[in-house]
Length: 257
Image 1 (tube, one colour):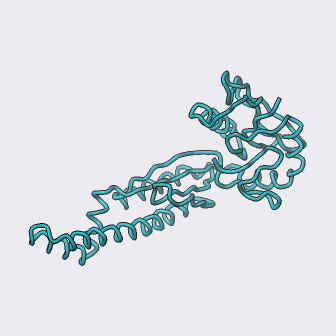
Image 2: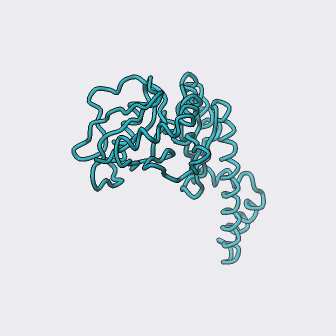
């Protein structure tokens, strides 16, 4: 039977919580495979697995439970190896890289920060900071709404100013929070958020980081800031030199969700 892989830990990692189950219907019991100084958190792989909400949550729950007791290198959802021997073979082949990553990420968690503008508040900012926009808006108001061309011009000016404000606020937010983090990973663009950034944070400094988030909210009330975490360090599991990002080898693919 093929083997579903959730993550990689040190062989000295504390035992799994009793009765921990993972993906599948019914949920498959989670178990540990060891190879030298490393271990893989696995279960039997169900047939026809699809990225449905229940399965994604089950995968994340296993990583959260294991990660609460120590460092885990998370695998992508759907990481399946032909069998247990294939998993231990990959652990042996990449042992040096996995040990290095576990050491670098030990005692650290990830917080993902997403931010967007509060529409009414950011429009107020744009109007207050741009005298040309204020002047054109006032001119249109005094002329009963303005001509079609002036309305288009005003809309284009406001859109450009808001776009510039998005970039400015994303940079400001990242700089405010990176001081309380060990590393930063910027998420992909075109996600629907003006900022989508993950921060690697020492567990002992988590309160300091969350306090920095609250200060950012207070200083930039025109932003809606969402915090997701603590999480296993999805965004900071770097591929080894022979393992380009986004590829799979031996049926195992380490990386972000």
